[in-house]
Length: 80
Image (cartoon, rainbow, N blue to C red):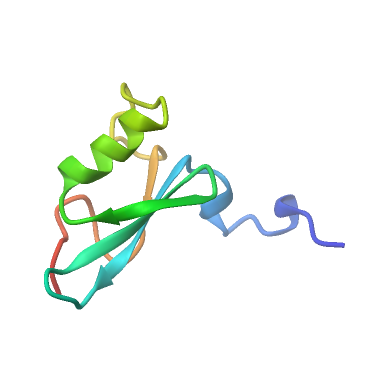
């Protein structure tokens, strides 16, 4: 049986918000998960903030360490 505590390097279980790598589409986007649920495609940091607001996380500092798991870039990475 798997327990998230047995995978200490899997940060996705700790961050409320996970922003996945840029998808090379027109326009490029990043998939966003909140509390383990896919909530949409973000084209900018503003989109991530709106998804958080809708999920009741309006006061979340998106650039503070530990609040968001940014995979494949940081809060300013929106294109390949």
